[in-house]
Image (cartoon, rainbow, N blue to C red; front, side, top):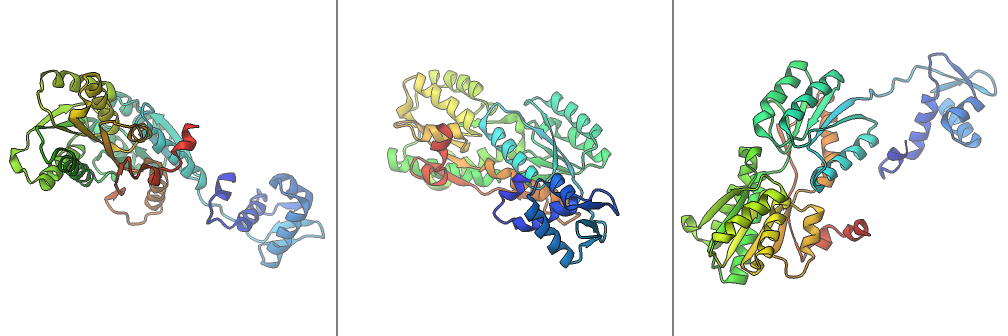
Length: 373
């Protein structure tokens, strides 16, 4: 109830009236005014006014001066059980998706059954079996390994459970999340403009940090980055591109970039990463080598750690493409309810993207200072 009342579009008087109706637990039950006060927790005067109004509208009838009964049985909306297989909680992006989904489920009075895939394919498979045993009505799947996606999707298909897949396509699932190529284009164009502004367009090397296990769709980010660079710089196929698999993780990207720059003599290096943890790993590798002035790094997701880095003076981390994970929850719940209501839904629902830089980070994320305090 409190979560519902925080929604600015909810009419509170109707919520209160629905609580009065829900106080009648069985057909034909007769309740006195004091019974309804006890069951709802509302004050005596408020309950009396609501009952008087409901009687006037024909929803309840008066047995005597202090007793009431429903005129007809009110059928409450079914409380759906939604399974959520989370990617894990090791970085801020999945944490924000999880928190937003919990809030949205509470607002809609959905029962959310949460399991943690822990970034491991075998765990994700076991979690799928667990959610099927839980007899959920729909599953929202957030796991990064494309290779195991068909096996996971097959389990839900066989069980007759509809599936929403976050950011990584699963066969037969409704996709929700990034428009990967478009997000890559934004990053590539920004890197190209940066090189034109700060290095007179001179680029000795482009370093792309992949997330190989996520498969072809996330690889489209990398293709978008390269296309955006070529478009902006007008270099064409002469652009020197080196790809490393950072696995989307800080430590893996740090080690890969650290080893690479030990042998690279390039003086102007543009770095496009699949996500922010790998982008920040690259930043730390260049800083450790004392070569931060030779690179410019753009990440993906605009996670809190990345936004903190954007506010640091003289960092080579110059931008990140925002996916607004804090908004995923509301969109996912709307999509889930549409699917469960048998409404027609598109095969893919894309989040909008926005380049976040040191110049506009406070505009888009003005509340970051409150989170840090």
